[in-house]
Image 1 (spheres, rainbow, N blue to C red):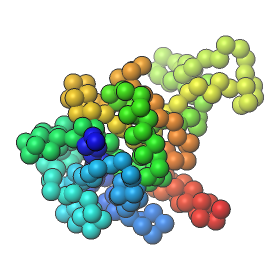
Image 2 (cartoon, rainbow, N blue to C red):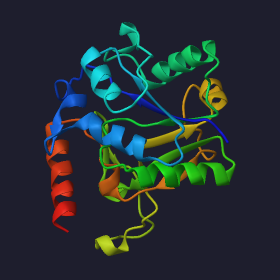
Image 3 (cartoon, helix red, strand yellow):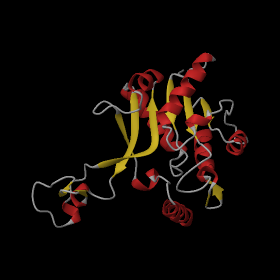
Image 4 (cartoon, rainbow, N blue to C red):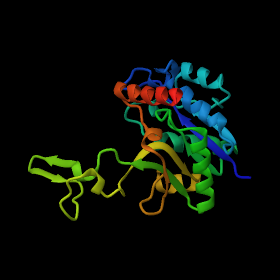
Length: 233
């Protein structure tokens, strides 16, 4: 049975929303959605937090998540990258002979990613035989309507083969990496310093609502609208 680690990065600071990981969404701290999804997963064998913030660490510990690892302050700045945080944590785990077989990165900014999404992605990862997987959803703004603007002018991000006037005629093969799920082996993460290799990484398809990523307050309002709709339905 492989050791499958749910790795939850949750630093204390945030530019867009102060203390974002503990910011209330429908009366519940944002981080709690991911903690509950991780705890509810049938396939994760461990759940581990990465944070420098004691309030966040105490909150996660109360939900049964391993909080022994303390993220260094230099990896908790706006400039620090998630992959550097993951690599540092892998070294910490290896020093303790606790290196997992598979890492599932669960960012707290994806509160509508559920236990079912996590388990389905892990099952796809294992059955495909790949070394990495990333979640995607259909682009809400179609590239045929998007522009790349510079001082020298502008161009379409993607150009249709013919004149398209109706949305129903759009090609539907454009997707966004939504940040809800990244899965890879420690070997892949270390060798590529990431979770994605073009045309090699397996894609896990999700509906746009499930892939919402909270960065600013309007994202919170969008998420609460989805949750209210789900509750009323």
